[in-house]
Amino acid sequence: REQAAREAEAGGRSGRAAAAAATRGRAAGTAASAEGSKPSTYEPPDHYKALGAKSSADDAEVKRCYRKLVLQWHPDKHPVDRDLAEEKIRQINNAYETLSNPLKRSAYDQMIAAVERRRAGVRLETSFVKPRMSIPKEFMLCPLGRPDHFVRVVADDMLRVQAREEVPGVSFREFFAAARFSLWWLPEVNNMCRLRVQSSAAQGVEGGLSLKFGLSDDFADASESDVMLGVVQDIKKANL
Image (cartoon, rainbow, N blue to C red; front, side):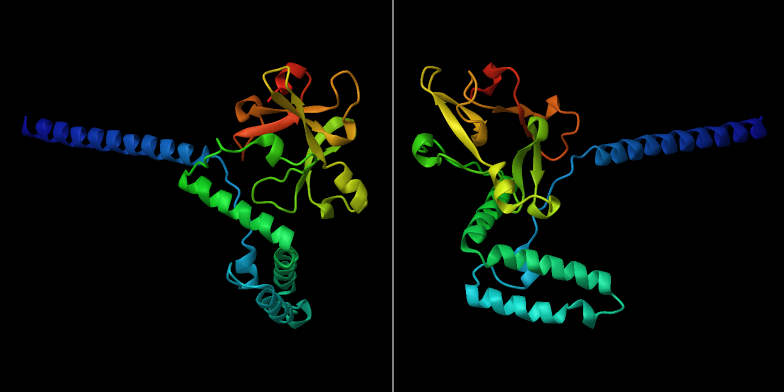
C-alpha cells in the first residue's frame, strides 16, 4: 500500500508539472503571437544625429559638421569597411541636403514635431483653421517623416510614394508634375471638397481624377498607417 501511495504521489507531481509546463508554453506562444502581430512603425531618419548637430544649430554649424563628417567617412579612408563608409556618406549627404535647405529643414522639423505629438497622444486644436485660406491652390503630399518622398500618380492612374532617386529616368519637371494636387470645393454639397490630381483638373464631368481616404482595414497590405490613400471609382466616396 505504501509503495502504491508513493507511486500515486509521484504521478500526481509529474502530472501537475506537465500541466504547468503546458500552461507556460501556451502563455509564451500567446505572447510571441501578440508580439508578432504588432504593426510595424516607421521611424523618420534623425538628420541632426547623422550630422552630429543640435536641432538649434545655425547654417554655419550645419555646414561645419557636414564637412567634418564627409572627410571622416570618405570611403577611401576605410578600405576594410568600405560598405559601412558608403552607407554613412549616404546618410550624411541626405541629412545635409535636408538641413541646408531652409524650406526642406522647416518641413522636416514640422514632421518631427508631428511624430513626437503622435507618440505623446497630443491632438492639435484645428477648429480655428479656415481651409480655403490655409490650404494653397496647389500642393504636394509627403508621408509623415519622409520629406524626400512624394505621392505621385503614375501610369494607369496608380498612386506611388517615391523619391527622385527611385525613378532615375524621370526629369525634375516630369517627376513633380505628377506630384501636384489641389482641392475642388463643393459649396453645393455642404461645402465639402474633393482631393484631385492637379494635372487632371477640369477634365471630364467630375472635374478631374479624384482620390479617397480609406481605413487600413480595407487594404490587405496596410502595415504602417491607419489611413490609406487611393484613386476613387465611386465619386460619392471622394467628398471630404
